[in-house]
Length: 105
Image (tube, rainbow, N blue to C red; front, side):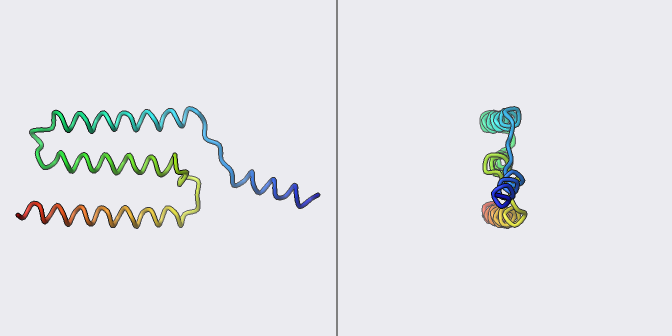
C-alpha cells in the first residue's frame, strides 16, 4: 500500500500542468511572429538579402517556442535541451556556410 502512495507522489513530481493563459500566450506569440514574417516578406523589399535572414531568425524563434512549450522541453531533463541546442547550432552553422557561399557568387 505504501509503495502505491510513493508511486503516486513520484508521478505528481514529474507531471506538470500548463495553464490556459500560458497556452494562449504561446499561441499569441506564434501568431504575432507569423504576422511579422508576412509583413517582412511583403514590405521588406528595401532589405533584400536581410529579408531571408530575418525570416529564418523568426522561424528559429518560433521553433524554439514550439519546442519549449508545446513539446514540453521546458520541463524535461537538461540532456534533451542540450541535444536540441546541438541541432540548432548545426542548423545555424550550415545556414551561415550557405549564406557565405551565396554572397560570394
